[in-house]
Length: 542
Image (cartoon, rainbow, N blue to C red; front, side, top):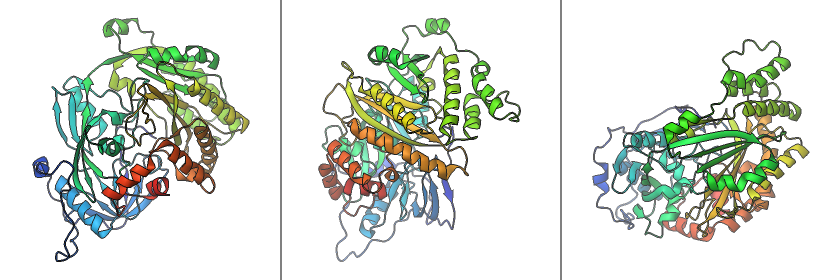
């Protein structure tokens, strides 16, 4: 996915009709203050009442919705945009009775289009307020549409931050936690574990105010937007901190020797494996005892102009008329190289080898605020499939994590796959949310997350790249099942599991998750499935 500071994700076509766009309400919370914690905030209409009228909520028709990477899109018939919690409540009440789909959507970032629903969607972008920071309890309360970047900025003012976050910070808080997104750190869980309270609205039960003592809480915390629409969350926060980051390259033999120590020693660990080379880029960071002293002793990497020379040299060799390359950064040069022949394995291998030289020249250190260190550039528009699988405990990593990627690299070379760099690998501890890919009952369980990609270098090449990535993704999926894993909920793609492969996906689901309980809750909270879409229906209900 592209990592840009601002996102524009809704592309409109056809007529847009606003039923009523009222100013935001100042005291939304007070309106819900009397709602019961788990009891429904409404009852079903009686026979004398008749059918309820459509709610007075802004609704646009025939809206083209495209996810950020441009890999999935559709035209939804209705896009509802509630501007208050009361409007959201009324919308779901009506939708349940009318059997009108209202699949919740945030920034539409998920590479698999997890939020897309042709019949109807509800955007949470207008419900994006920060409710407040509780310094005594160490929490921040936000509305569902509040972006992670907004949260970090608000916390920065108070000397606070989040324990961990994904490389992209433009996700809305609800969608980010509903899929159990993650950063990296063997002792740090996925982001849903930061949630300590949720206010959600279910089509059948109404307002649900849940905390960690409620049985429904861990299910709603990672509910995939299918059990209810989250309207407010309370997240744990920690004091703002500085990180001392080190980047270097090693071989597999060296990594096999050091891997256990790296996971146990560093707060954050990330590997970037470069296919068709024996180069692994290691990025580790810790909180320094003395940030000023660490900054003074840092061994800074070479200037970027020197580091990118291997890519410039290769580009001039392959395309002598490539023009002036001065000032072009690493990502720009890699894209210029890949676009020349993105599906030729020999060409991609040459690009990867030049990239390996770049990273060897990029070895060095830096000291900076955690928000600067943990957010990083993901590259251009891309197809991606990321998995999650167990790899022992933090006390005893079993090395299956690095064995997995080594086996994946062998598959790439044996099948001549045009696999661009990197294969990215990260880690988390377990989640206690039953629908998290990292769910475990074992407190010290360790999970690895591995993502493979193909860059979409141009619109003309996009269809062929999609077809080739599908082949690549099938190998990744088969290996995932072999290692007892599953996929990031925002990245599992039904197109990679068609025909007989679909049964394998369902089997993996049944082995990993308690689908019986999830289905029971679904029937109780959303019996007409107005929050579902093709992905949730196929994965969770067959």
